[in-house]
Each structure stands twice: as structure tokens, then as C-alpha cells.
Length: 168
Image (cartoon, rainbow, N blue to C red):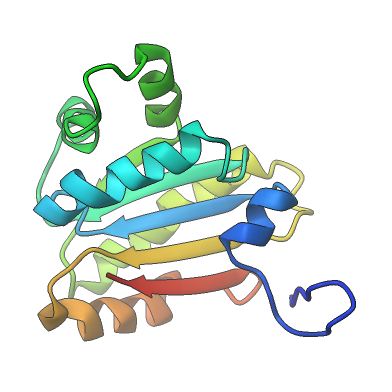
């Protein structure tokens, strides 16, 4: 399925359109347990979420090699937010977040990730009729970019939605 900016015929299905049209959107943050994710990526996503600049039908999935409990992931994802941040805002943000652990070069781990994405898609798009957007955000060292991109294409990519890869 393609989507075009009205009147232009050009492809334009990023987060901007997803937010404007409230398209079901899944953001997968690869490297979710790392320093970059906890200090920059998750705080930035939180501030976009808090300001209403992300789609309302949103899920954010952290993916990393580290085994983390839900509580440990939530603590890590929010530890660099301002101490003045309202707990209700943090709780709302964490309500759209989840975590999947897996290796960066193991196909079965990406099959499990795809299952988690599909499950979340059913929650935010129950009739399955809306166009969906998926953003794969690599908060990773360059040494694993190729492995991760290869696994995304082979095991996670969905040709029925807009897929975007962001390299930090």
C-alpha cells in the first residue's frame, strides 16, 4: 500500500503524516538498553509524545540484547527525564512502551519481534483497515547496522505498511 501527499503524487508516509492522520504507528528502538537510548532517544520520544506530536495510536517497542524486566526497562527509559515531569505523563508514555530482548543476528529473535509488533498492531488497529507506519530506529553501534537491517528486511519488514529505517 502506498500513501501520497495530497496533490503531489509523491510518497510521504513518515511520522509527520502518521501523527496528522493518526495512523497506527509502531516505533522499534534497536539498542534500547544502551546509553544513547536511555539518555537521548527515549527522552526525545517522551517529549514528542507529551506534546502530542506522535500519533495517538502509537506503540514503542524497545529491542536489545540485554534481558530486562518490564520494571527495569521502564526505569531505564525514563531515568533521564526531568525530575519535574508529571508522573501521569510518564505513566501514559510507558503505557505505549514495551520491551523485547533478542540478539542482533539471530533470525528467530526477529521472528519473535515481528510477533510482538503484530500483536501491538492488533491493539492499535483492531479492524486492520488503517494504513500502518513502522519506524525502525537504530540507536546502535555501526558494527551491527548491516546485521540488524538484514534481519529487519528478512523477518520484520511488512510490505503492507510504510516502513522507515532511522540510523542514529
